[in-house]
Length: 273
Image 1 (cartoon, helix red, strand yellow):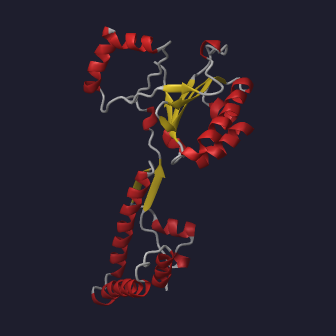
Image 2 (image 1 turned 30 degrees about the horizontal axis):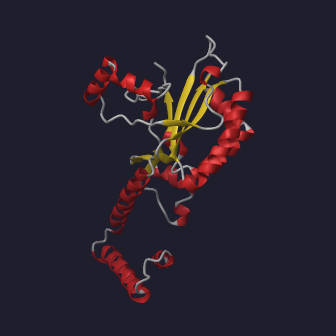
Image 3 (image 1 turned 60 degrees about the horizontal axis):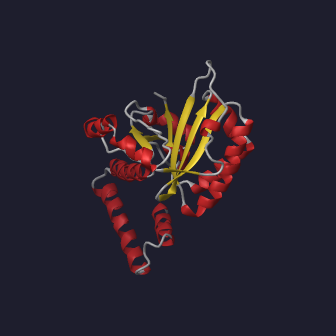
């Protein structure tokens, strides 16, 4: 009996800890009462079950949104085709609604901007902030931006960014592909990630001709955040070559354990102005 299986799982999940005997009996009795009501009196059990699916669908949509995942529920589907594909009717089920899961392409939206700045010291920062053009921009931001800018003070890691010591330069035929990858991590993995990235970056810079810049930064005051800044000669150098290197595969496995949420939600593909 399906209801008994649900009850057993709820007990396993600790739902009835306070008084297992009484709470289980009440829960099972209440469910049977509603089912019998719709079966025998209202005779609309299928319509009622559809409503139960949609109640669960609402909870599902809220749940995935908290994980940063975009979702689109869809009706108007060919249920017979879907049922046949997954063998649902043989199991006593039938499809009702489909939910598409993924990530919207807002990372490439023209309204999102990244500014990457380097200054010699704090005096240079103060001087820049006092300039009329900087003040004009700061005064304009509240009117042209939907939210306040997020400022991150970046700190070098090993190996340090090359900057002027980087002898790799783009060629005229390159279609430069730039990535900002600012991601949240579980703190217990921080030291392990920094060690792995030291190998990863060293190998990438020395072995991959398609890579122009690969830098990793920590964020001042945010130990749970790391930032990667990359330039590639073309996009395929990332997906077809870089991610198939042994050190990149090893880093990827660690990242899947260490990063909070899905990796893709943190990736921003940008166009240099």
